[in-house]
Length: 205
Image 1 (cartoon, rainbow, N blue to C red):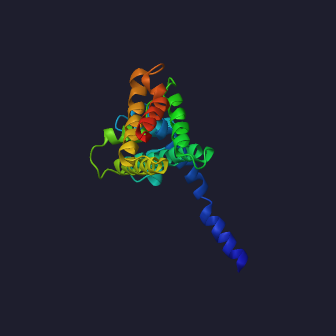
Image 2 (tube, rainbow, N blue to C red):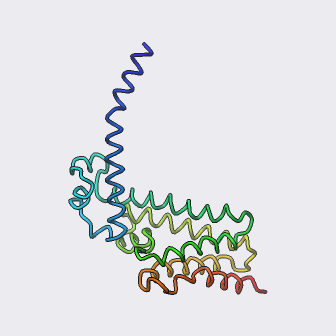
Image 3 (spheres, one colour):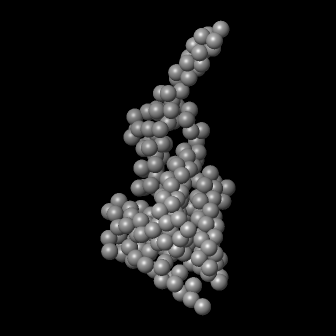
């Protein structure tokens, strides 16, 4: 009996591996296209063509293009917080250094030739309707970032921690946009320095 169960399990799981592989390929292609060209600008036909799969294969993995966009952003969200947490872990107990470390990396990324800003910010601009799956993921990311920045500002001892946290968020969003506008040598490269000046001014008594 136990061997029968194993055979049944392996039989059920066998088709899952190719399906997962196809889903990963589709998501990888969609992510690249969505980030570079915009979500609305890319159709399903272009995605399946680049991924080398069929439409039925795409829809077996993702019920709709909206869900594919949300999946791309959920992956983007996970990687965003990995980068953020790396900066935090590198400076335990020092929120000011944590923020500067994170923004130093943001500033460097804005100088890359292929930089297209923050995928979350871009998606929020593309989808103003708050119930859209892509917008839901984007809003959750930004709300959490705002919460963390305010908490870190409070941990620094800022008298008005909410205002400082929001100011840092505005600097970050500005870097995302200006990085696309100005490219190499643009103001986004100095986002960490400007954040440090803002923090210094906010902590003065």
